[in-house]
Image 1 (cartoon, one colour):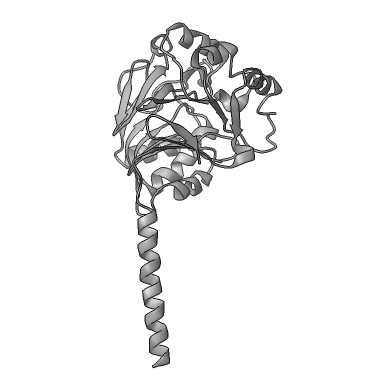
Image 2 (cartoon, one colour):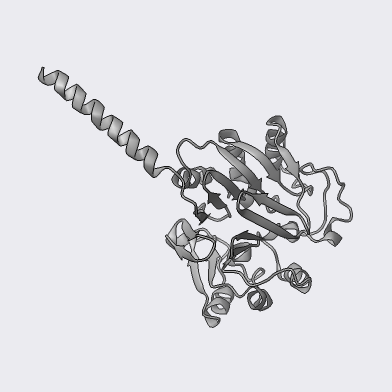
Length: 291
């Protein structure tokens, strides 16, 4: 009898635990923006209710740990994956993401990386039958209440690019960082500027178009490299918060002292994944706060 009671108590405790887990896994009606701690790389997850947009995947499978921490355990779909540009510290983790999750749309450049790892990603996207769109200035992506307005790659970069919406169909002598997807992610009146690894020359070209406006959050370009953020970009975007995605004790010296000073001089609150782990910003479309 005692053994039977123990089994019953254990059974009811299990039911209660599963019920509580299900309750706390139900998404709310706010935007959650997470700069994942993936070491020396980029992976930005935006979630709203049960929809997700993932921008880059970092250098390895650590991105899966971030997804597990910030997505409901039963959610096995990421509606939109965006690869800002085909460099290893941005795309490698996406291989594991696509193996584990169903992806509806893959946004990635037609410019090729010409490495075996990138061929693996291209073949995987093709074998899964995932729809591909090549990003370009003027492309808008809407996912529920999330809206991404893309301002780079600018048109003049893509004059030699075939219009066929495939990954890796042409090579270039230009810096792959120049092709980085840059865009403003909006949720109500809350705006985030995503920048990939864009450099100063392209920043000047983009800001000259007048398509970058005041944002609440800036993802600092190129892991805080001195070949990324410029004073002009800070003046135009005028962010309240800057996030640097960077690996601890990396060999590149990121973030650079020059970039940190630039942010400090303008009194912009700055958070780093090497110091904070995952950085999560929450917004109801009017206000925003840190978790």
